[in-house]
Amino acid sequence: MGSVLGLAVNPILFQPPTKCTSIPTPKKIIWLKNAQGIPIPAAFFRPGRLQGKGSKKRRAKSEMISPVEEKFERSNITIIYSHANSEDLGLLYEKFTYLSNHLGANILAYDYTGYGYAKKVSEAQPSEEACYADIEAVYGYLMTLGIPPIRVVLYGRSVGTGPTCYLAEKLCRKNIEIGGVILHSPFISVYRVVADCGFSLSCLGDMFPNIEKAENIDLCPVYVIHGTDDEIIPFYHGCMLYDAFGGRCTGASAVKEAPVDNLWVEGMRHNSMSKRMSINILHNLQQFLSSVNKRAADVLNEQKV
Image (cartoon, rainbow, N blue to C red; front, side, top):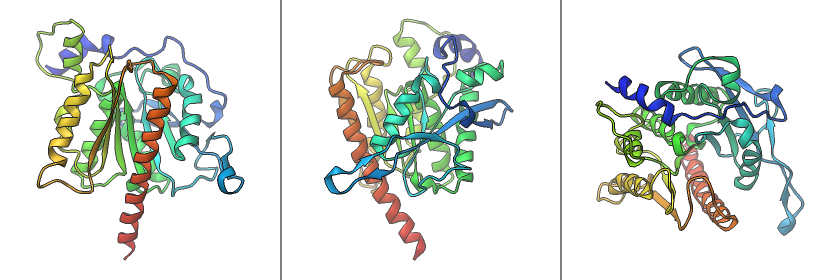
């Protein structure tokens, strides 16, 4: 019955841009194939090198690279970024260069089946199953670059929190420790979002049941970001997910290495934020990634002993 729900909800849930937004360096797109044989485009961004001395140190501009052919720091945290709806690599290109530099992290971003450059080379339509296959292909590629899982952070925004939670749970079930998970404007499940929007569904099943996966994401720190005025995915979704993680992490049997934290942004809507909100989020992400980096260094040092 879940497939029936998918047929009903897919046109509402998945809304790729009508046209693919081009990027300045299309030759550096990394083409992957997911388990369904569908071509998936990805883009790898590395932060600029630090220049200057002392308090005058500044980073050169971040750039999109071909990681197999060009050098990058494997000791940096690498973020797998799963974007929101109505977005693609081209629309987010400048955002990725900005984030990579200000977070001091590599970013591996990708388009879902049916989005952006993927839409140009395949007629395959986006679906829950395709999203899962897409992020697995991206993670698999990242592992071929020799980056330790403990230095990998999964970042999902909006619909991107679905594949993010899926992969995080799958890796935890395999006892693979990743660096962390960031859920930005997450939902507890698609059915609940659809119901919040006033649609009624008579079929059984659900899609992207993030709330059910939360209890099994127990080997890494989790950071939840949500705006109090989110009109697309109501604020309570973020609160419920935080509670699902927090109930485990604050109990007597808590995994000390896997805390959960949150950032509730007063007045932030789903797709708009003020400069002050943006700076606040960036500052908090820097702190979170700093703790992830320290934890990764400790784990890797223990493995050497």
